[in-house]
Amino acid sequence: MLLAMLLVTGCGQASSDLAVIKTARSLAAERALVAKLDEEGKLRRAYAGGMQRAGVQQLLSGRNALSQPEGAAGQAIGAAAAVRDEAGALRAAALQLARIEAQRENH
Amino acid sequence: MKITELTLGILTAVGGFVDVSELVFMAQAGSRFQYALVWVIVVATVGMMVFGEMSGRVAAIAKQPVFNMMRHRLGLNLGLVTLIASLISNTITCAAEIGGVGIVLHLLTGFGLVPMAIAATFVFVATIWLLPFKWIERTYGLLGLFMVVFAVALVAIEPPWGEIVKGLVPQVPAGLSTTELLTYGYFAVAIVSAVMFPYESYFYSSGAIEEKWSEKDLGLNRLTTTVGFGLGSLLGIAILASSAQLFGPQGISPELPGTTALEAAIPFGRVGLLLALLGMLFAIAGAAIETCLSNAYSISQFFGWRWGRHLKPHQAPRFTFAWLAVFAIALAIVLTGIEPVALAEYAVVASILVLPLTYLPILLLAGDRSYMREHANGRIAKTLGWAYYALIVVAALGALPLYLLTEGGKL
Image (tube, rainbow over all chains, first blue to last red; front, side, top):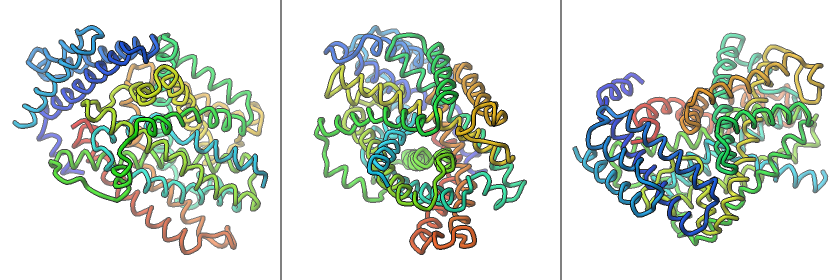
C-alpha cells in the first residue's frame, strides 16, 4: 500500500494528464461513432443528442483538469469539444488526441 | 417444485445479473484487452455461484440472514466495522445505479438527467412501498431480460469465436508495458468485484428468508445460482466481446455509459438501440432497488429490528426508514454532479474491500454441522469456498493500489 502511494505521488501530474488525454481520445471517438450511426439513421434523436452533449461536457471538464489547460493537449481537447456532430471531423480530432497520447507515452 | 416457479426464478436471476458497474467495466475491459479478460468473468461467476448457493442454503436451513451471522461470527466490533463498510459501499453503488438509470432515461426521453434521476427514485420508493418482495424481484428481473439483445447482437456481428474461446483460458497478454499490466490487473480485480458485489448475497439471502425458503427449496436455490447466474454472466461476456470487436479498433474505451447500447444499434439499428436501452434501464433499476434494500436488511438484521417486505411499512418502521434514508442519501450523491461512471468505479473498489468480511461468516456457517446438519458444506463446496475466499482476499489487497496506480484504469 505504501509503495503504491509513493509511486502515485512520484508519478504526479504527468500521469494524470495522460489519463485525461486517453479519456478525451475515447470521448472524441465515441462522439464520432455516434455521429456516424446517426447519419446512417440507426439512432434515435434523444439518444444521439444526449450522447453528444455528454461527450462535449466531459471533454470540457477533462480539459480543465489538465495541469496546463492552454497547452497543446488542452487545445486539442478543446477542439474536439468544439467540433459539431460530424463524424469525419470528430474522427480527425480523436486521431489528433491519439497522436498526443502516443507522444506522452513515449516520453 | 413447479416448473413455472423454477423458470421464473432462473429468468429473474439472468435479468437481474447485470448492473451499471458491469456495463461499464465489461465494455471497457473488452475494448482495452480484447478477449483476454473473459476468463475472469467465468472465474468470478463461479465464485458468485459458490457463495450465492451457500447464502441461500444457510437462509433455507439455518434461517440466518448474512448480517445476523456476521454479528455472531465476527463479534460486535468487527461486525460493526463490516456493517459500516458495507453501508458505505452499498450506498455508493446505489448512487451509481440511480445515476445510471437517470442517464438511460435521459437518452430514451431527452429529458434532463437530474429530473430523470429524481423521478426514478420516486418510482423506486413507490415500487418497494406497494409491491410484495417477489413482485419487485420478478418485475425488474424479467424486464431486465431485454438485455438478451446484447447476446443476439454479438452473434449478429459474427465475432471471432475462436478468439473468444481462447479468452476462457487464464492468461496475461504478452507484450504489455508495466502500466498496461497494472491496468489489466485493475480490470481483473474490478470485474471480480462487479460480479461478486456483496449486496447480491445480502439481497439473495434476505430474499430467501422473505420468501420463507426451507429444505424443499434447496433445489431451486442450486439451479437459480448455477443456471441463472451462469446465463447472466453470458450477457457480461457478450458485452465484453462486442466491445472488443466494435469499440477497441476505433480507439473507444467507453467513457459514457450509453455507449454500450451502440453494441445493439450497430447490427439492429433503432430497434436494437431501444431494446438495449430498455434492458439497461430495468437491469440497473433492479440493482438500485437491491442495493437500497440490502442496506436496510443489513442494518435491521445487525441491530435485531423487525425487517422485511412481507411486513407493512408501519409494522417495520425502522426498516422502512432505513431504505427511505438510503434512497435519499444515494440521490443526494447523484445530485452533487459526480459522474455515475466515477461512482461505479468507487463502488467496485469499495465493494472488493468489504468482500472478505462478507463471505467469511457465510463460509463458516455453511460448513457448521450444528446449524446446517446434513446440508453443511461437503468437500467440493468447502474446497471451492476457501479457494475463492483466498482469491477475494488477494483481490481486496490489490484493489486500492491498482486503482491508484492506474488512475482507475485510465492509464
